[in-house]
Length: 112
Picture 1: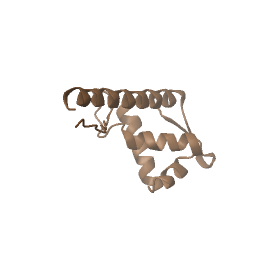
Picture 2: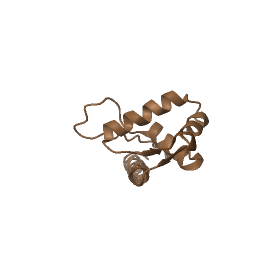
Picture 3: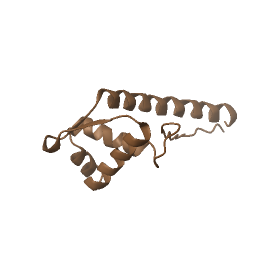
Picture 4: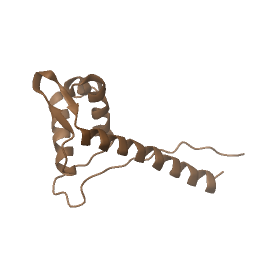
């Protein structure tokens, strides 16, 4: 009987020599996708069931460990991704998709 697997990868990114704790991972990516949709860190956090203060801390920490600005914070007018934030998120999403494909193919090759 041939086996089929679901393989899930998780990529965590930080600047190689970052002094700060933390990384850019799925949670930060989810917050950024929510900001793309809602134009608001607060609404994005709320959709995820997260306190705004925690979301703000996570975003600030991600920017610190990456050494790039991910968001424009516009106060009561909300937030939006910087061009570099958009690019980083797109590359991260592609890396996760491609890594998952590779892991899946390795399992299919060696375990059927």
